[in-house]
Length: 391
Image (tube, rainbow, N blue to C red; front, side, top):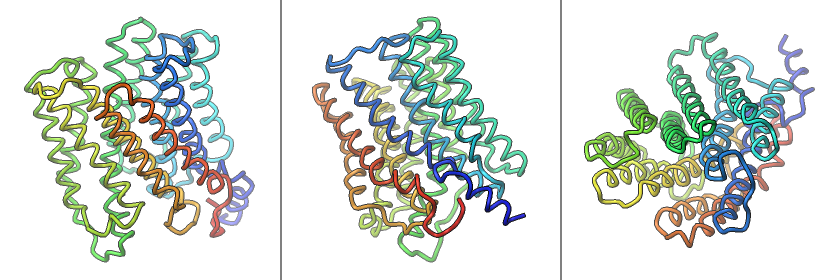
């Protein structure tokens, strides 16, 4: 039976053998193209006609187009390790990726708005069904919180698309911002597992980091409540009492970073990139607390610290590390990736600190970072594992 399974897997082109391969590559390419287009729109160099306007497109596509693609690639791969059951591959994986691509293109072709909405929700729905099927069959109760957050993400996407259909800017904004903070919850959930493990392995540390389930649960609950406040509209206006959950989030993220920190991480690009990107979660929470207290003029600065610094930085660092491990390579990224990690963090800093006139530079840093990943990792993702493993 194992021999037959091996032959079946080897008959599949390498790109379609596991979810991380097509989704990491497509997501990285889309990240660069989408932000380049948005920057061109802001500079008055382009004005594509899309449903609801380009702001609606940008709000939707960064969390639900880019973010969900990478989340799908990571989780569809990780669930195989968690459950011991074969992950999505071959034709079903092609169809899911094709659906994701169709949903991206539907914004720019003359299709009915209803079809665009169906394509968007069909992708996230099928992705969640696949994850639920795997986890429930293996009775992986400890991973059910991931299903919860994914389901809430789908509800946020529904809210955003409802706002698009009704021409309601407030609904769109509420759904997109709630989704962004739910992605922050996922980054915290996954980061809480892999960052200490990667740090231990990367530095050759024998002793594992101590686990604190109460900290993980508190971050989950607090993060979901913050997202719910965005979805309900409570976080759209400054309210001093709402600074409390954000300050709690900042303290919890800071506690994690302090526990995980070892001086040696700054010598290893695959480690400092993860730790630095995770620190943007703390900064985003502090930024929202400051805004609610009247110490920060714009809440969008905190939102972009989360979107560009935390989401972009952690996604890039995770893709670089996971792609090496799952293609059977040594955990040593191409030298250019250190520049990529630096560029995505520089882009986040420029977006948060500099004025509007520098947005083009932030977009350029982001685009170059993901272009470096695509150029250096595309051959790895499109070729078979170097260690002979069929995955």
